[in-house]
Image 1 (cartoon, rainbow, N blue to C red):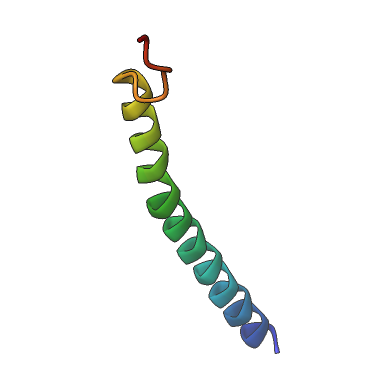
Image 2 (cartoon, rainbow, N blue to C red):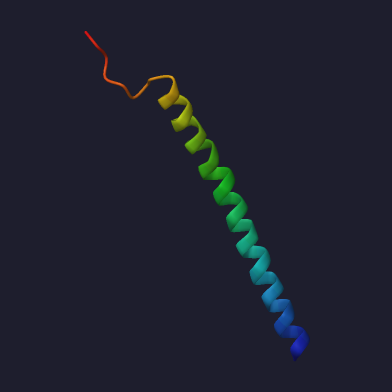
Length: 48
């Protein structure tokens, strides 16, 4: 009984880790691109 419970917790932990990794690799590059564009002045209004 105890072994089944620990296996279930382990699977849940792996799923949460996978979600965290996907979140970081999904959101990380987007944040990096936004920071890069901001540094290059992409979001500044053009002076005419």
